[in-house]
Structures are given as structure tokens and as C-alpha cells.
View 1 (cartoon, one colour):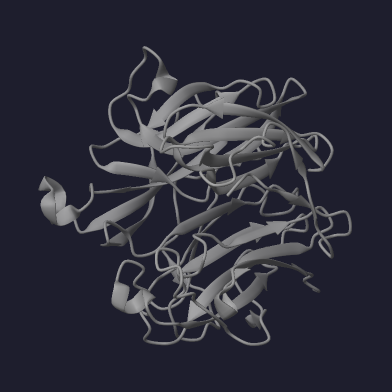
View 2 (tube, helix red, strand yellow):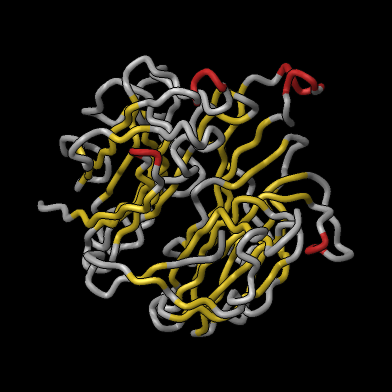
Length: 386
């Protein structure tokens, strides 16, 4: 597995692979790259990051940059040491792109040099030269629990960097002193000084622990338009079971006070193990999710579950009034897909579902289709008509 990224010049109708510098000599057998993430700075510079290794067992972060819309990627800038689940956010500082990487790691990692930190949490890296070099500017680990970032790093309209994260006991919980802790908690924190300091973390919600992690996951998006809801934050929680049912949505106007979780209306019964959220340039809120059959609790770590095929559907819905009402869920796939029993560790052949909004107001949904024991990247363009 090697670094790959695709670009489209026709609004997603067709895709072409970009050219990556520094990857031609990667050994095709031992190389392993995963946990890809990408973002655009406001000036159009694109960045992507991979957690990967060319050989052996050591994983580093590989960061690439593109100034031509993803045709050619320069780099890589390699941040040594194990940093898991990297996520990107970019803004402009003095008219030049500034890149933030938020990843899961220990405070005593080499990236902090002599300024070691205590705890395990969200390592915040910053590049002030367009992704060519990085410095570690902070570690979000406010308690003795483990902490990991969620789908959240965003630049708010006021220029602040927003990060969301979850805390939970060490694994496996039954063998640790923290075994009595049965809930994790999601938080947001923001920085006005480029990640050097952060606000007091504000709780979003609790989550039941399952296999050491939460039974749901939270993704966050922000309204960056000049409309009436500018600056509003939306947090979407998925669920591996039917209890509570479906997806739950929360909002915040200040990244501190969050509304109670409310069910997204119109969903059928069944677990929603993956969900994604995005907001368009017209202020339309889009949600997408994978959904299984009613009563089929998703159990990624149980062989009895992963050894069987499980049907799943892919849906999309939108709200034009800030999440008060939603359109009827749209079934994206003409027929249900199935999990892949050939890959028990990743029965959906992925850990992610991606949704993005382009400048013309359309949504672009990307997922992995696993029918017929194949894993194929699929994408579609969705336009919301008022």
C-alpha cells in the first residue's frame, strides 16, 4: 500500500491519480500507508497526510503538498514517530498557508524534543512554511485517561483552531485500574494563538464504552458562510446499535455550550456505524451514513460477527434551516452492499466515510464498496435543490 490521491477536473464525474514525489522507490511488498486525510488552504493549496512506513514496523507521518489542485504532490515531509489517526486543518497566516496536524500520540514523543509532556492525547503539530517543516505546539491530554482526536479540526470564522477529542480508559479496560469507568466523553477546545494555548475543554456528550472505545463516534463541521448561522458548529454522532436509535445531532454557537443530543428524523431502524457531515457554501447541512439491518449490532472485534456477511445501505439527507428539519433520507446505492468476510479486521474495508462540499454548493460523498469480495473506492456528486 502506497500513498495515492486522486483529483477531478469535472466536478467529480471522473478522477485521475496524482503524481507523488519521493515514492517511486518504495518497496512494493513491505510498504504500508493508511489513515489518509486531506484539506485545502483558503488560497487553494492542497495538503494530504498518511500514517505509513516504507518497510519494517515503524510508522511515521508523511505529509505532501500540492499547488496545482492535486495533479502533482511535493514532499514528503516526514514527522518521525508513531502518531495515529492524523487529521488536517489549514488557514492563511500573513497571506501564506499554515497547516495544522492533529494526531493521537504520547506527550513524551520525539516531536516534543526536550519539552516532554505528560499523558497520551491529541498531539498538535503546526507548519508555518506550507508543510515543509513542522513543530509540536501542544498536547491535549487534560486527564489521566487516554485521548484521541475525532473528525473535527476546523478553522472557525474568527480564525481560531477548533479541535474535538474523546477520552476513555486504557485498553483492555477490565485489566486496568480504570475498569470502573463505563463512559467516555467528547470535548471541544479552541486556540486563538496558533495552537500554543487552548481554551478549557468543553464537553459535548458522554458515550458508552465498547471494546475500550465509545459506542459511537462524533464528527464536527462549522458554518463558515456569511449567512445567519455563521459560526454555528454541528456535531453528529453515529451508533453501532439500535439503542439509542439512528444518528444524533447537536449544535453550538460558541464551541462551549452544546445542545442536548437530538435524533435526526426520518431514519429507519438499524445501526449506523459510520457517518459524515459537511456544510455547503450556501449554508446547507449535509449528512451521510452507512446503515445495517435492524437488530444487527455491529461488533467489529467479534469473529462470530465478522465471519458473516452483513447487508448495509448508504444514505444522505440535508437541512436548509440549520438542522431543524431534514429532507427524506436518500438511498444512494441502488441495491445494498455487504461487509467483506475476507477482511475481518475491517469488515467495511475502511474505518471512514467521507463527505465534502465544493465551492459550487454540491456535496461529494466517498465510500468503500465491498460487494463481491472487492474493495473499491466509489464517489458521487449530490446537489440539493431548495
